Image (cartoon, rainbow, N blue to C red; front, side, top):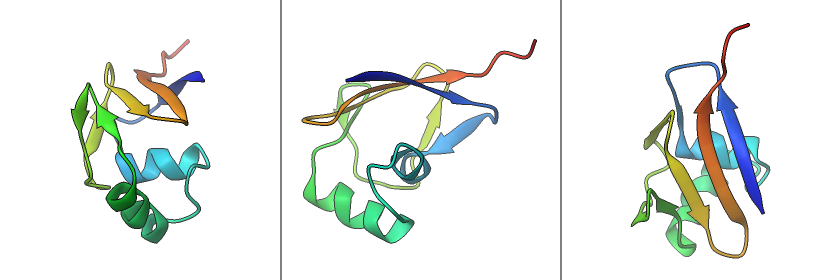
Length: 75
């Protein structure tokens, strides 16, 4: 699965993205999930739920999908 995640703020944390995309149910679950599963941020391993994701970042989670972080454009 490939999905674009639109943000209306300068950044979103990795934990917030996991929760928003219903990969986890809470911030506490995000901490456990990142400890137990491989998550790649721009092709580099990442395990900090507080890591800030900015426009242009890509998050890849094996067996889940690829998420493209993009800034929401104002009309």
